[in-house]
Image (cartoon, rainbow, N blue to C red; front, side, top):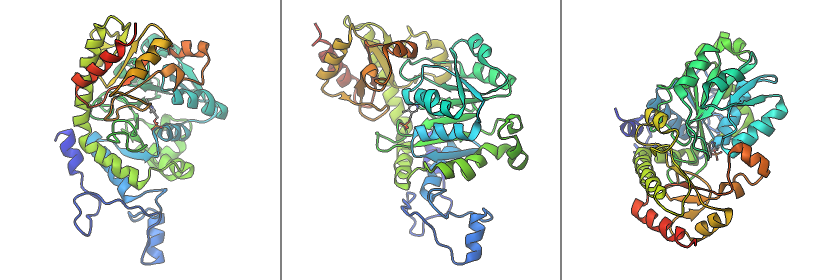
Length: 410
Ligand SMILES: *Cc1c(COP(=O)(O)O)cnc(C)c1O
């Protein structure tokens, strides 16, 4: 069955007593039991049942079940945001002295999580060029636990070869972890590319119009946990379910960054139209990127679906014709970028990605404002770059808006 058919037909664990056609929102903190024995059984996981919504909740579980159904994954756990999903994953997987191979060209807060927050817990991040396999192999040592990539990096829009990275990971018995926020589920098949753990910020495409924050961790069940120094003991008890058990029974529970039932409801609703919205916003992006390339005021246009992109071939191979919906374009200066942004009429000046509305911003002065000019160079963020997250309006209306704003620059 196709992606959307499966999203729409994932059954509830228990049908609603009123026969509601949609999973109800169980906005409750706790669940009552008829006797002490059944409450004990629920606490001990001897019987399926919810006890407290920080741990599990029926509406949240329904979202997780849909994602399990469409991915064929071993386990899915949702979080209050994409950052919560990433940080919980690393708190579950690594211990002081371990290192992770990644790139500096990451979503800004992820870089900050690695470079500042986790660093202070003794976790090291080794920054390599993930599009250069020799650089990746050279960075691995006996303390390396994982390779972490973004399928399309934000905002550099680099595309690494996930299949090739997975081979390196398997040869070294380490994990391949992919943040697929820019190309989740329908747009990139993590299972086919041998990703062990997939992380998605549900705030973006899945929420269905920037309605809510959320994060998802998907375990494909492909890693042999006896190879994990931190988790090999748990592996004796939990086998394939080691990581899911560690998260569910400890890290997710103790850090408390659970997805709220209402946001789970919004994200379930979002998933139902995700494929439709993704096709439209990706097709819009290609049309706009091709148009921008011909505009005299515009310098470099970056979009992995463009033939001029250094990542065109790998992008076609991994994502097919829908190469995400983020475009960057270079103008001559920061002043020109601001002039362009200030003259946009339909396109909104806002952060966030994969809203239904098209959003534009100047990354250097916003999401990367905490970094020095030297750090910005290292992170690959230029003062002359605009990022546009393309929505589902008509491409013609968007091009007209971009055109009139570009023409205000003289
Ligand atoms: C937005 C984003 C995140 C963080 O997600 P939040 O839901 O904002 O916490 C992580 N990775 C990527 C690639 C993102 O774009």
